[in-house]
Amino acid sequence: MANSALRGTKSIHGGNPQFLIEKVIRARIYDSLYWKEQCFALTAESIIDKAITLHSLGGVTDRQTPTPFISLTLKLLQLQPEKEILIEYLLAEEYKYLRALAAFYIRLTFRSMEVYEILEPLMKDYRKLRVAHAGGYSLTYFDEFIDDLLTKERVCDIILPRLTQRSVLEETEGLPPRKSLLDEDEGIEGNDASDDEAIRSGASSPDRRRYISRSPSRTPSRSRSRPRSASSSSSGRGRYISRSPSLSGSESDGGEKGDTRGRFVSRSPSMSPDRMLVDNDRGEDDDEKLEGDV
Image (cartoon, rainbow, N blue to C red):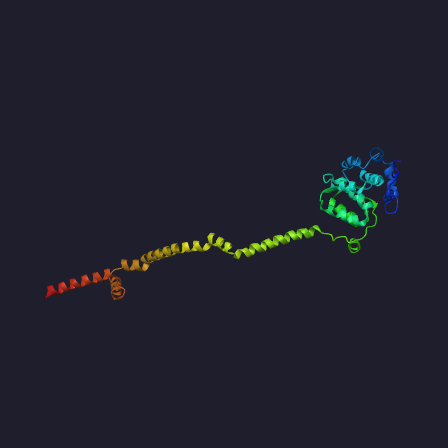
């Protein structure tokens, strides 16, 4: 009796729901120790305690040993819980293997329209899942597991019922188009790009100009440095002229060079007042000498 369906169970896809699992695997599940000890007299409520203790997905492992995951799936096919109970399984986000078990059962038993509507929102879950197979264990992600349920023909060593293409359901049954998460990310990037454009356009705004005028720029520093450089260059230039070798040579040389410098200074139109006073004194002395001779 434990291997038969309950009274009042409905046929799924035109047959016994247990027949959705292949006969060879189903027979091995009936003979497994886990089925005889852990799955006996389970209900839609008590099966939750078994599902939250799962640590992997998968169909059969070495020596065709069925996994607890596929054994609990067969038990759900016997129990046929209501849709509201399965939705509660999916809402238990803290138990990822319970959600995976409910998603796998929904893929096996529900219509194509409901499969797309219920399973596609679960692709936002990116948690890791462990998969048991004949070679050992491997890792996958929850969204990849859901994608496999929607696209592949065999998952967990079970042949899945044929699923109507989504494009056909959109045309015939009015299934809304799928909203990809990538489109939402592009929308966020588009908002960021618009914000960048707003920032760039705001660079020419009055507030931006006031900010630039108040911010320290290179122009004031250059304007401040120019008088200093000019004063230093002019003072350096004066010192350079006064210390030039030509002037020191003319002052150190006597006789002809001194006379030549004197003649040059006396003939130049830009004669200094001191030089003019010296020349006038020399002229008065010469006049006094001439008067004494006379």
